Amino acid sequence: MALPRNALKKREKVRAFALGLPGAVEEFPWGESVVKVNRKVFVFLGAEDGSQPLGVTVKLTDETAHAHALACPGAEPTGYGLGRAGWVSIPLEGQGAPAAELLCDWVEESYRVIAPKRLTAELDAS
Image (cartoon, rainbow, N blue to C red; front, side, top):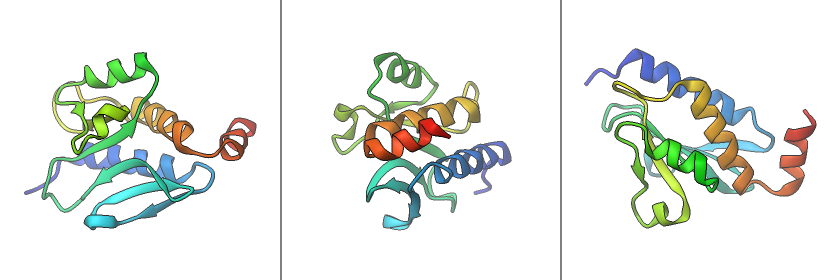
């Protein structure tokens, strides 16, 4: 199955942004891309092999951002009980999918929730 180019480009922008945050590293558990800080995941980027629709999963504890993310077409609380902790899975494809810039804002919020204070201070200083 061919993946939509615009969704792939969006995913790549989000990935590059996430990896540019202080202390961020990419790992591939379960054959999927995740970006971690301090050994904790702050964004799930999924697989790029076409086995599933492209999407990102972030932790949004701010009520406004959380509600906004859930309002995106196809977005839903993340499975495996993660949704109860504020995790939202957002599709990158289809009509009304969020722009890369908005996704990067959400990735930064997720990072701030999970990163240690010294790294968020480093981010604020830059």
